[in-house]
Amino acid sequence: MSFGIDRITEDQLNILRLQDKITGTTISILPDHGALLHGFEIPLNGRRINIIDNYAGKADLERFLHLSYKSAKLSPFACRIPGGTYSFDEITYEFANRFQDGSAIHGLLANKPFNLVDQLADDNMAAVRLRYQYKKDDAGFPFNYMCEVKYSLHPDNALQVETTVTNLTDGFIPMSDGWHPYFRLGGKVDQYQLQFRSDTLLEFDEKLIPTGNTVFDDSFLYGAELGSRHLDNCFLLDNEEGTPCCILYNPENQLRIAFYVNARYPYLQIYTPDDRESIAIENLSAAPNSFNNGMGLIRMSPRQTLTFSCWYQASIG
Image (cartoon, rainbow, N blue to C red; front, side, top):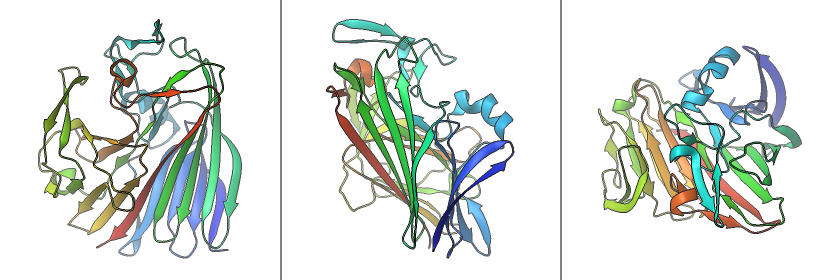
């Protein structure tokens, strides 16, 4: 078989690996820690490079996961909910878990153990399906739902990440979905070139919460060097299926990542950490604070199932 799946333990982390045996491309996943993407290693100039900015080991992950949320699954909400409160169907809810600024942030599944429920490896691909059943774990979200994440490694360094959520309650529930991966293409991000299909920026207040207004901004519509710009912004995508919604490129080594999404990810959040070693490019189904402002919020009906999909295509040149 051209593709394979195995398990290893490295730096006290249990890692599930998908491998393209022909090219050497490897995908590493941490089922015990939110099914997060730990590695996307590709061959580059006779060596291997991991284009995912990850945690150095278990101790590093346990210390910093709830500060940086690298590669976290953002479910059932993405980004911030100020004060950790929202109203749904005239009932007010308050999350128990809070970020250091007092807001609820990045959902409830980042540290949850996902179970492997299905796997496939043949000459065309390697794929695993991981599942977590949320059972009213936090008072702020007293609903039951299922979250499944499917990673599929295809030829030519193509990774599909597909999320399926199912409402397991007899009533409606609020829902949004997203990812929080940090990408590194070598060197500092200042030299990277970024392009994405948007000229619409969501206006934020000083607490990084959408005001409800949008601003014309085509800074990256035709591609631009990041330079010294600090970004922590959300954009509304003009997505066209089959065409990259975003391209990240390092001209120094010609390493490129193209991003593709289905229609359920109309928002793109961009964040540049202070160390400038990587950049977070987050595909979101809804805007920050969607549980309050309703921007992209999904009102899931009883037993409804929804699927969100994104592709990452890594290449040289």
